[in-house]
Image (cartoon, rainbow, N blue to C red):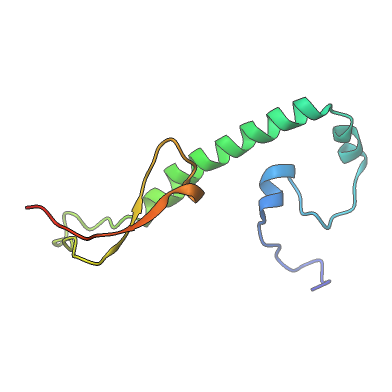
Length: 104
């Protein structure tokens, strides 16, 4: 909508460049454009790493059930879909798996 009082949804652009891609450039943005490409690349890589670290610590961990002491948690079952965490990869690259065998 074109109503300025509407809420704006966060997009990946907010995390990478600090604003939406549809906003017109301001003088500050023009000054940032003068930063050389290597500095910009390094800054973006640092911001991406920081984002994924916070995403994992603050969001993914909140998805886990916190009812350990209130009731029994469900046991793993054959055929369930699971997320395979790999510390060497960003969360968007983690593999999905299906439980094929259970060990006592």
